[in-house]
Length: 264
Image 1: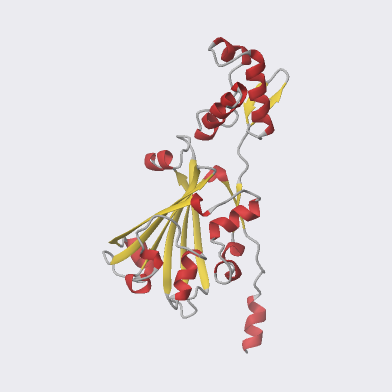
Image 2: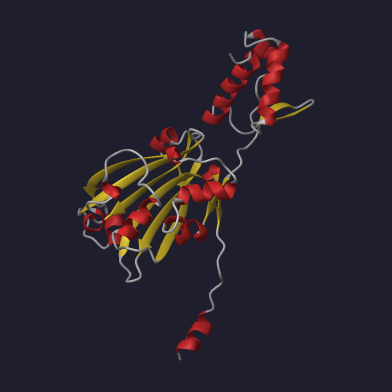
């Protein structure tokens, strides 16, 4: 049986992670929690010390105990799509981010549902289809330590994924190497990608699903994956809690003048 201070620390940690106690907000004074029956002064003090050791709060004399802003996850740019991760290994992109951030991870952090739906104008334009055409939608909710960080829904032309694990309705990840490995095994190797990012206010549905503060922004990602022939084989829309990610891009700087010189 856990000691009382541990139970209280866990209860307060859950309130912090759910957003009930927001970053920058003071936790109640120790005497107030004692007065409401949460425990003795030593119990509450021990619980606060545990939260501080876990990096959830900071305490200082005269300023009380304040909820710390969460440390943002590193969201890799080009490196997260390294073929050695998904083609030759079994590391899917969201796990690559966790490894780079020094965070724990497991395949159970991602759940998915698969459905057949009609392509919107945006999806149809990305995949080279007519609006209203049938597409497969593979929707994922990704979590960290049980709390959601972002959603990602990938759309595919039926002829590219029919009969593959990508359209298996069984909940859970697509398997070893993720969706890119499935496409590779089906004969559609990813050669290059286009990513577009923009920030916007979260919708009420996103606030609930991602457990956001009501005024929190999200970063929406549009990603299109192409084969070397230029065929779009995946179009994905991601919605990321803006405060939970730090986007990192590291790439060689192109020199188009040099390229033209070699071709002439």
